Amino acid sequence: MGSHSVATNDHPIIVVGGGLGGAAVALALGRKGRRVRLLESAPELGVIGYGIQLGPNVFPMFDRLGVRDAVMQVATVPSTVRMRDAFTGEDITELPTGKPSFIARFKDPYIIIHRVDLHMALLDACRQIPSISLEPDMTVTGFEDHGDRVTVTIQDGRTIDGAAVIGADGLGSRIRAQLLNEGRPRLNGYVAHRTIVPMEALKADVSRDDVVLWAGPGFHIVHYPLRHCALFNIVAVFRTSTYLEKGEIEKYRAELIHTYRDAHPGMKGLLTMMDLERRWAISDRDPIRNWSRGRATLLGDAAHPTLQSYAQGACMAIEDAVYLGELVDLAGDDFAAAFQRYQAARCVRTARLQLESRSLWEIYHAEDLAREALWQELSERSDEDVYQCLAWLYDGVSLPWAS
Image 1: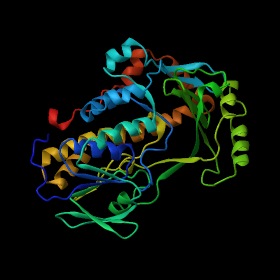
Image 2: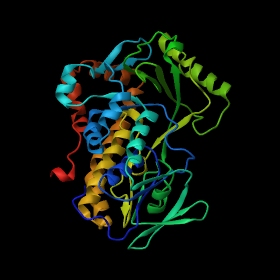
Image 3: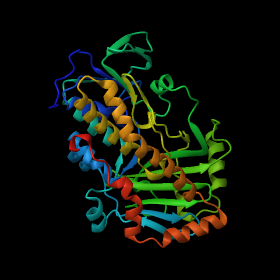
């Protein structure tokens, strides 16, 4: 498959982290004939998750990975992605994902999918390739780069030799911590509660067939259907001084009721359905130019964690994965060169997403007069204006083999 002979030393490429990015890069490399060992700390692969949204830029990547059909079987194309005023319920702006003009402009659809279903499509494709080994219950604590190979250390003390190591281990990446001496991720004072309910249990008076973001000062809710409208995905996000504290469910509930006290009845109806067992503190990091050293590199949230404003975290990880697979293939055994080319090709695009996500986050949660001014500006945008604003992102990337 690959244009180069496979690595002369027989060490596998080690992927740390079996999330969407890890599964995608294992698949990208495996399809090029590379041996891959994917090490995931959880006891099982791909069993947890909520809904995610994927923009059209991910589809050429799915084509390279051979999973487009598998993904589309379990995905839904929403009629629209709508931003709505949290108090009045009025529409502010929308991305008309169901209109012919959207496909005409971006060539591929915008989809909503259960994260588990996407994960399984990637893992199933990995399982079809004998050179890919998927290994759960393997917590990697660190690695050593020997120049001609790497050694990763597992929590139980075992070591594994590899040709290179790819840290796809997310926001709290151990591989990143070893490559870069920096602090914790940047918390922004917001938390999220996520819930999936059966569609028939949904009593709130809200739209059931599109993506809706209700935007309010310091809070928002996103909701959309999953699994061909069998399930309904709800995410409630808000700013709170207790974002670092682990609280009791009743305390969380009181906080939600207080935060959304003036919100539209449709939003309040959704809040009664929220599972408050878990909350996630929202965070990202500042963009960086260098996330590779020698035979080690990072991918996805380990390299460039972003806020959820554009719903592009998974897309960026999958773009990274395919791009990296192509460059490793082109570089033969020179992993250091491939990794340098990869970060140079990816850093501006991913940095722009990180920075624009922060800006959009501020817009979603704007207050008082700034809010009214922004809403007015957004409401004046035509479909074409909206497409133009998203073109840098949704037009995707040219892969190195095509250049």
